[in-house]
Amino acid sequence: MKNHVLRPLFAVIGIIVLVLAARIFYVPKDFGVHERGYMYGWYRKANIEDWKKVQVKYQGAEYCKDCHDKNYGAIKKSPHQNIQCENCHGPAGTAEGIVHFDSDKLPKLTVDKSRQQCLRCHYPLPYPSSGRSKIKGIDPDKHNPDIECSMCHNPHHPNLEGMR
Amino acid sequence: MITRRDFLKKTVTIAGVAVPLAAFEIIDPEKLFAQVAAEKTKVRWVFLVDTYKCVGCGFCVKACKNENEVPYDANVTRTWVERYVLTKDGRLFADTPKGARDGFATTRIDLGLGKYQDIKKDNIEKAYFVPKLCNQCENPPCVQVCPVGATYQAPDGVVLVDRTWCIGCGYCIMACPYGVRFFHPVHHTAEKCNFCYHRITKGMKTACVEACAFGARKIGNIKDPNDPVTKIIRTERVGVLKSEFGTKPQAFYIGLDEEVR
Ligand code: HEC
Ligand code: HEC
Ligand code: HEC
Ligand code: HEC
Image (cartoon, rainbow over all chains, first blue to last red; front, side, top):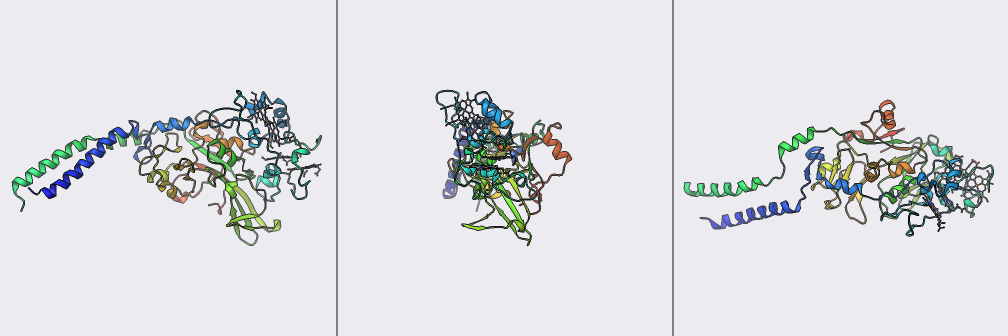
């Protein structure tokens, strides 16, 4: 009997058996081949539910409507009607699931008055086939520099007639 | 010299060990083929980008980072907006500073390494913005290369990453021809756009679609013939990125140009 040949062989087989046994305990039951087959659908099924559980942060303008009806009403009658409140004020919800003004743990929303915020759209870029060239642009170095835009323009109702 | 007796003894031992090994199910080929055939889902998410409408405000990028908890100041993002500028003298410039998180409030092109190129208005031949995100390919190469089954295609077509399963090898990041994958700075696992899976499965729009004031981004279900996005994709001229790779990308673009990579 050539023991020096067989012993390492048994050791290797033993390790393989151990790994396979450990695999039974370690790999969850729902891990395996699913709808899209082995190439695209080999995964742990419960992960789909994990992803669905992520907190929704952005609530949408309709959510703000009832409490901030003045700003909501104003913006809907202005050229800014399609801009979401939360674009400028940040998301109303947090990763922990607290939403702006549903309790006393209210996350404060930011009021960003920076000129930079408005220049995202109003910095003039003359790009012929892009929607950008159709938005009225102002040169920030010449158009009342160093004063916040909202000192003169109402961000929720920027209509030039009836300015502040 | 191996004797007949030795040979038989060894064969029996090895066969004896091998039998219980086979009892451990790893992949059952029968199940495997049965499931490939069974493709009868009612939802297949697709994306539609209209590059004519995009103004490069970058609110989609801001919303995406906040919604999906991608650290705001880290230079990684699930979606981004590229600017392309072609000059009259035939040069092409493209940039996406910080993924356009703060929009484009300058005519200067960011060439990287702190260098900028200003392009005079009269020298612009063609210029536009192109929002980018995961194409949720029908044949996702990133999924094919994953050695552990941590990234996969959900039945509705969205490619997801299992953070508890990802070992961070980075193969998928290399495999994606569109460069949409990166390492999450906090979780240290592969990260990518998943069409805001937690929103679309609740009947909401993705954060980027909702943030877009110009209708440049739309999400739809291609298996629903009455979906407005489906109608546009079926009846209008739309293109996809890098079709030569055979990945069958499912983000469709209106106004795609040759320069867009
Ligand atoms: C349930 C009612 C309610 C809803 C819904 C609500 N808010 Fe408010 N919000 C308030 C109240 C009350 C305050 C005043 C808090 C204070 O003065 O401290 C406030 C304050 C604010 C402020 C000013 C914060 C500051 O520091 O001055 C902003 C901006 C704001 N809300 C934006 C929004 C947006 C955007 C939404 C929609 C996503 C929204 N709110 C939804 C009740 C609400
Ligand atoms: C284009 C960016 C922008 C959008 C969109 C926007 N806001 Fe504002 N919001 C501002 C700015 C800037 C201020 C600070 C105004 C000031 O200094 O007078 C502000 C102030 C506020 C305040 C503080 C109190 C006040 O009325 O001045 C509230 C509340 C508020 N916004 C709610 C909303 C709601 C609700 C919406 C959506 C209907 C909305 N905002 C959309 C930019 C925006
Ligand atoms: C000192 C007050 C003041 C400030 C500050 C100010 N504006 Fe104005 N803005 C005006 C007035 C007045 C007009 C209308 C007359 C005109 O066209 O100059 C105007 C016009 C505009 C127009 C329309 C231009 C057109 O072609 O009709 C836009 C867009 C605009 N402003 C954006 C901004 C932005 C963005 C900022 C901040 C970066 C800003 N404004 C800051 C007073 C101001
Ligand atoms: C998401 C892009 C976007 C942002 C951000 C934005 N605007 Fe506008 N704004 C528009 C569009 C679109 C129009 C309508 C087209 C036009 O008149 O240029 C407009 C129109 C205007 C007008 C002209 C209104 C008129 O009657 O002609 C003013 C003034 C203005 N915005 C000021 C601001 C100010 C101040 C801010 C920052 C608080 C701001 N905008 C932020 C997109 C934006």
